[in-house]
Image (cartoon, rainbow, N blue to C red; front, side, top):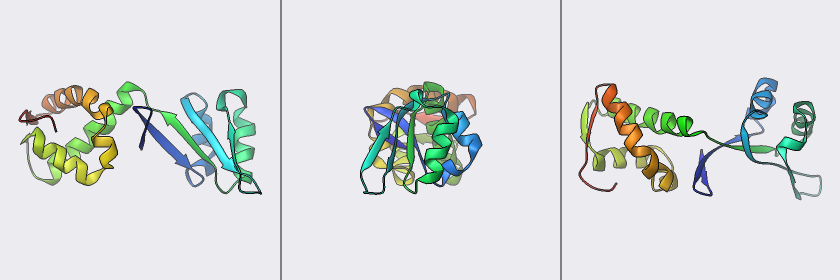
Length: 144
């Protein structure tokens, strides 16, 4: 996971892209980009929507440096942060915490650029609401 243009994106590398099913699923998503390095080590960019899944699969199989990044839908962003939050609460054997503790736990388990982003700020109320529905309580103490 990465932050790109104030959006959470998921990056798939060559290892992820070996599976034909993954490539097929990516065609229905909103791509940020598809790149690979050619024989002269130049980065080549393709617009995913202008090539077929078969063409994409063939290019990826020929490349050792292929990457694809997709924008996550808002529900996927909420689910991503929710799952991390829930894991942290369970690992710390807690059902109640304050948002400062939750921030610190998340910051230690995911990239700080993600947890310091506006993406987390925007998702946080919905994540806290989902945690509350599951029996957890996050007490607001600060902006973290």
